[in-house]
Length: 130
Image 1 (cartoon, rainbow, N blue to C red):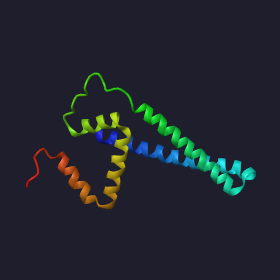
Image 2 (tube, one colour):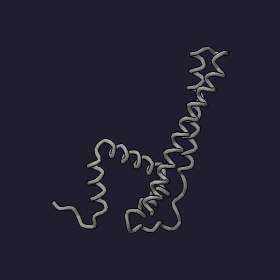
Image 3 (cartoon, one colour):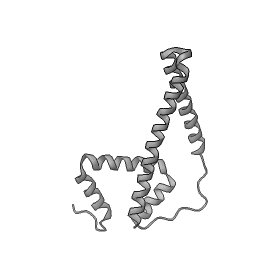
């Protein structure tokens, strides 16, 4: 039940990310079409690149300022099992969790055997033999 919810949440996040990419491309094309009659092709492409660079810089500044929050007054409880630790990671560091999920997905696509072994190692309570 919980695994299904987590899977549905990851699917929803992937859908939203894809939709955001489509919106960004559409807005860039609209800006290009708006600037092209006045600036020409090269000027319109430069205008789109400038706007994207400015937005990326602004977003980076906002994230840098937002990342400087103080430590929580009460320490977070150490989760007992893997699922609780994963949900805590997603809540505290969503960007890192998204990158880890994307990496695990790429690893599963390239070689499912490695993902199976990694999951088996994490879910087993016994330490690995040497």
